[in-house]
Image (cartoon, rainbow, N blue to C red; front, side, top):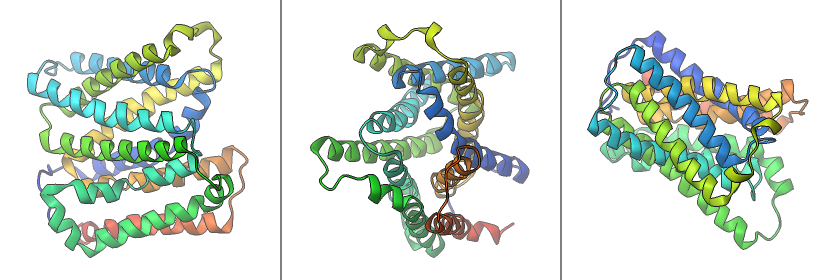
Length: 308
């Protein structure tokens, strides 16, 4: 399969970038949960992305990159809101109603949406047996990974608010995929500058919602514990500055379906962190799910491995 708009990139750099979005983003589940003990969700989003965007902007300024490119600003506004604000914001809102395990399953459908919404490569993707097999296998693995939690916690009769939350998560997931594809095919200028602007635009949107919901007016900095501050620091530096920058860069140099495999690997990392550091117990079905997910990533990338 060939996919357009992929720039050549050093293999080592690609491997490092994938390691970041696989491992670092998988660990953010743990740190977001820790931060939200003291930070209201939309205040957290505003603070996290404004801080990370500002850090990247200062770095770009020191490197003398062009900061104000009108086409890039337009693209960054769209991508920042589709990916970070809507994509993440819907998850924040939905987890007030739904179990995080169910949300994780819905979010893991991202590779499916990438295949369907990547119109430039739709025919090629649908004809690629490795991509289709890998996507189906990976989604089945995620369901198996969280099957016990889902069926144990899901209420027998879902209320209206739960149904709405389910639809909101799906819409947010689609928004993330559309934003990622828009970034891939409409990228302008330096990718780090673009990532910085995307974070800042998303932070503004989070702040507006935080004001609308009243979160910002009841938030007190002095009430934040050290654990929450350390968690936010990790989210800013590793989750956003390193992780998001790596993700945006990968979209420019690798096929979108390949980059989207992070949606399968992130839950694996989250579960393993819970086992090793959270005292959680892993069951046989979960181990099977982990193995199937890793197999799916190999299947999706099998055609690429043959070219190395």
